[in-house]
Length: 302
Image (cartoon, rainbow, N blue to C red):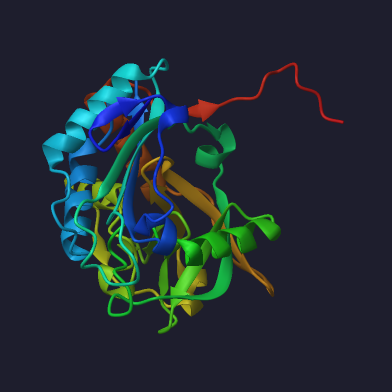
């Protein structure tokens, strides 16, 4: 079932106009979050970011947080699986041409998609990032802190990373500072201090990012939002990535077209924060984290 503009409809009957600005121009916002045992994790934080994004993009009369809560409860209730992925998205609505003046009513949608699970090695051993040569915009060039639907730069960077057998892309801005991944925020440990690029360098204001910073503070870890030049990646002692679905996963190495830039093993700060994240998921939802897909023992390699 899909929640479309205020009501539940069967998926095959959920239709959006070809004149919708989300389809025409990527003029939209979205949130994606895990549902563990019927409980959406960090829903309040996602809804606040969605509302902040609507204000930033100057949407007229967007759905309220309560409207979104009703939509989320409806699709979770209609979902047959206890764990799923909740996706909330909206566009400015229908209008002709680039002018926003004709769009008076946003299109808004909620749906429960299949739960995202990961191979055990993702959280146990880590991921590989490919450093893209694409330049990530700065906040004065695009609304980078919002989770807006104009995702083409990230899509192309991720596709490029996959062609190099990497799990994720790494993007830098025009200053040569590490910014973020195609679908994740990035953290590094440098001289014993946990650092992540500040929003002034262009990363998304990630929900899992904010959660990890809060956990670091609660654990008494030294941490800061601080720029990190790409040329200093090799100086880092640990690295990990975050997003709402993967939670927190170590980064094993960064590669570029010339070869390996940096390599790490999951370190003590990464493991400590991972344990704290697991505790938070369990306290909020009662579920075990991470959600791991383990291949069957009967599977044979050819």
